[in-house]
Amino acid sequence: MRQFQILFKNMMRRMVSRKGILLISLCIPALVVTLVVYFTSTFEMKTNIAIVGGMETLDLNPDFFHVDRLDEAPPTSQLVRNRYSAIIHDQADGDYSIETMKGESFKNIVQTVLTNPEYDPKLHKGRSVGITILGYLTLFLLMQGQFYMNYFSEDKRIGILQRITATPIRIETYLWTQICFGFVMNYVPTLLVLIILKNVFQMKIGFSLIQYSWLLALIVLVATTFALFTTVSFELADNAIIFSSSVILITSLLSGCLYPMTHQDIIETFTAIFPQKQYLMMAEAIEEQTLTRTFILRIMYIGLFVFGLFIAATVRCQRKIKEG
Image (cartoon, rainbow, N blue to C red; front, side):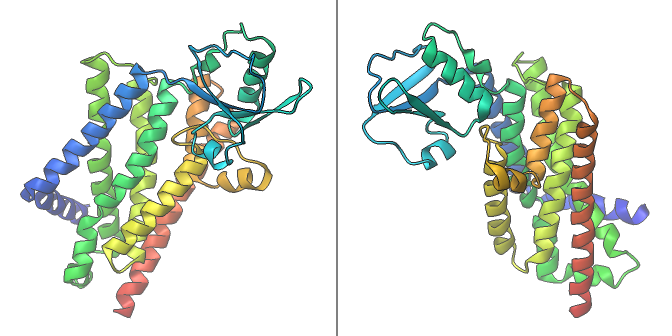
C-alpha cells in the first residue's frame, strides 16, 4: 500500500507541475460533457426519411419528419451513418417496403405512420436523454482514457520503468497505480460537471447522480484498462493512440453509442462481445427498470473484460521487461 501511495502521489505531482496538461485535462472533459448534455437535453432532432419513387400524396407530419423524395435509392451506408433513419421504397400498386437499421419497433412506427398519416408517432422521442448522454460519453471517455497513459509511455521511453523494476516495487503495483491515476483523472471531472449541470443549471441528464456515479465508474474502468493494454502492447505512444482510437471508434459505432443500430444475424452476435454494447443494454435495463438475471450477467461480463485486460497487460509488460 505504501508503494502505491508513493507512486500515485508522484504521478499527481507530475500532473500538477505541467500546468498546460492539467488545464487541458480539466477543461476538455468539462467542455465536452457540457456540450453533450446541452444539445441532448435542449434540442429534439427530426427524423430523416427518404422516399424513393412515387408516393407523392404521402404527407408525413413535419413536426417529426424531414422527408427527402428521391428518384434513386441512396446507399445503405446512409442508414449506417444515420443520414436517414428509414428508406421507403415505392413498389407501385400501393405496395412499399421499409429499410431501416433501427430495429423492428422503429419500423413498426413508420409502418403505422404510412397507414395513418394523422398518427402522432413521437418515435418515443428517439433515445432517452440519459441513454443518449451515456452513449456519447462512452465514446469520449474511452478516447480520453488513452490520454492519461501519457506518463506510462514517458516512463517507458526514458527508462524510468526499467529503474522501477530494479526496486522492491512490483510491476503489478506500478500498473495498478497507472489505472487508479487514469481512473481518477477521467472520472472525477466528468462526474463533477454532471453534478453542476444538474444542480446549478437544472439541466436534464436522464439518470440520477447516484446512477451516473457507478455507471461512469464502470465505463471509465474499461477505458483505463484498455488504454493500459494498448500502451503496454505498442512501443510508441503514437501507434497506441492510432490503434486504440480506430478500435474504439469502430466498435462504438457498431455498438450504437452515437445512435441506435440493429444488425442482422452474425453481425449482431459479433457486436455483442463489445463492452460498449453490453454497457448500453445494461443502462437501458436500468432506465426501463427491468433488472433481470441478464442485467447481472452484463455487469459480470464487463467486470471480467476489465480484469482480463489488466492481467493481459501485466503479463505482457513483465515479458517485455524480461526481454529488455
